[in-house]
Image 1 (cartoon, rainbow, N blue to C red):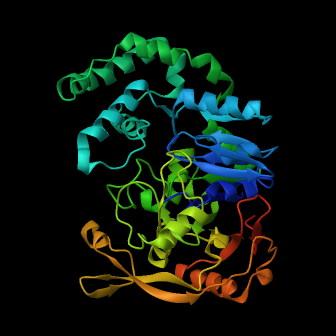
Image 2: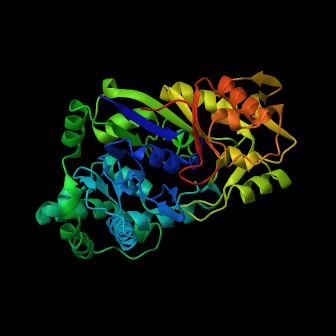
Image 3: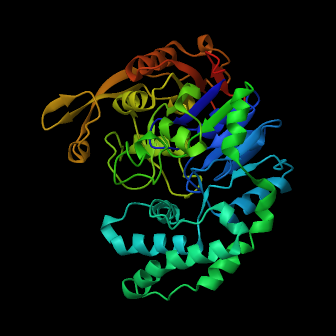
Length: 427
């Protein structure tokens, strides 16, 4: 019953797509369990680069069944466009399974997301404006539209009417926008029904039967631990649970079926959007990390904020996810620094703090306490084993492993599929 969860251990963009793709050849199912097309995974296969937003990375691995679970929010137009793009490049997408219980991002969810963010002004969260938050809000308020609703026009119409009863009041009276017509929304959503039908399935049943048959199932989280709605840097977070527990609710499997939880860590730290970031750099080092690391959001196109590795965050991710392993990515980006700072603790109000403060105020005022580690100048992109790395690079990895609280079982030394050192097998 080999079920693995693979998730971001920082603020997202850690290289989960590369890690998932690495495991793809050994995995029978890859499952997205939360988030929407606000996530972005880049996978490099040979000389081909793929940017995935909603689809599981396993869709690029022949023989692997990609699954969009019930915990995901789905924009049908984005999904169909992404499928079409891959088909044009010769990728077989016919095995995709889409949960009938997944919620749909409607046109009015996108509208509400954009106008609300503009209305917040300086208090804005940094949302991608793709309707993800309002769709999850509709889900919790029990006025959401699910994939299965596309196949019952009467129910779909009733649900759209219920949702727009309140939203049109807000749009017209608060935001001075025009009301959205129920019939127009229903017509647009019904147009997706036939196109999505070949993929719709009872994914909870499929996945549990697969695990009973000893198939290997990989649960792939979007975003990262510090963007979790419950355990992240609230309110500057996403609207779902990227942490390991989210895999159980977002895919419909029990926690006793999870055998391994793998956290993806960058060898430094980045984040997109607003919110506290203790190790953020505003100097030449920050710009160098951004340039060398190609730190631009796959989905948003925004430059990522860059900073040194934060071991406090890594320890926190180990704890809240029950991490069994780390996959360390982008070690090659650090080549060329004489010394590399690593944040080992925070200073808050003159006191040293070695664990993530639960108080938003304390975390906002946290100042990094750095330990300096020796750097290296050798090209590491051709390294095939841990012993091939320069001694200082080996020492850096070992230091991060000790500080973070879980073994580093794989290391990314370049963007390519084959530019990975596997220390311990994940399966």
